[in-house]
Length: 176
Ligand SMILES: *[C@@H]1O[C@H](CO)[C@@H](O)[C@H](O)[C@H]1NC(C)=O
Ligand SMILES: *[C@@H]1O[C@H](CO)[C@@H](O)[C@H](O)[C@H]1NC(C)=O
Ligand SMILES: *[C@@H]1O[C@H](CO)[C@@H](O)[C@H](O)[C@H]1NC(C)=O
Ligand SMILES: [Cu+2]
Image (cartoon, rainbow, N blue to C red):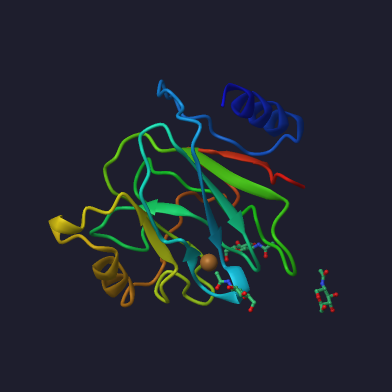
């Protein structure tokens, strides 16, 4: 895990990619959960309901065409959470998986709601969303989130700069 982070940082710096290093003092578990965005031309994250421990990492692999992973609150699907995680639009690709992935650390086990912030084609409205550590007994379920999302439009982005990413790292996909 230490190696992974070192490599990730070195690679990110080397390629001069936009990255935001979270100020985190969380012990990495070494567990990485992969989530794919847009596989088979679907407007879906797979899996879209992930259970993760504090210190696990999430790695998002992007399929065509032009998706993000962006954190929201439960109550406001399809809207960026202030100070939340966002990959930015850095993974547009036409035919194959994007050369880079977006990774971030799971900082706690509270529900982490996420969606795709692509307004063209209404990705969030059409179900491109998910959750890490859903607490279904609270009534705040992914099904409910998607139901609320189905009547929402993406009207604002986490940043004026579409490629700005926050709360994670953009690193080369492995294996290349
Ligand atoms: C994508 O399509 C392939 C080929 O049709 C299929 O085998 C695979 O299960 C699909 N993957 C998902 C996540 O739907
Ligand atoms: C991806 O989509 C965003 C939002 O619609 C847009 O700003 C950006 O230019 C797109 N990128 C590419 C390479 O098409
Ligand atoms: C994507 O695939 C199509 C069909 O195979 C091909 O015509 C097109 O040139 C490819 N585009 C890129 C950017 O590779
Ligand atoms: Cu999308």
